[in-house]
Image (cartoon, rainbow, N blue to C red):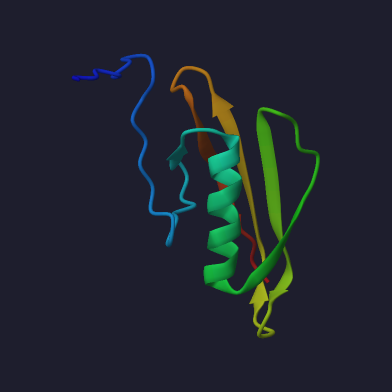
Length: 98
């Protein structure tokens, strides 16, 4: 049986589940996959993150101040649903200066 499930309105978005990127413009298929990627990114970087003022179409996260091993980390990022791109995209990743 041949199955052609290619839907042109649904972009094919692939991301590295073991080493996800959080650069501005990085797409994810949906918010669930983005949150999964953020958790893995935090595990890889050995830091804890917090969230604030999240909505169904927007997710904001920030470093809680230091990594698990005590190194300082100051960043904040925002990802939002991009209707025109039909995906969740990292739209802001700010590295704060100490």
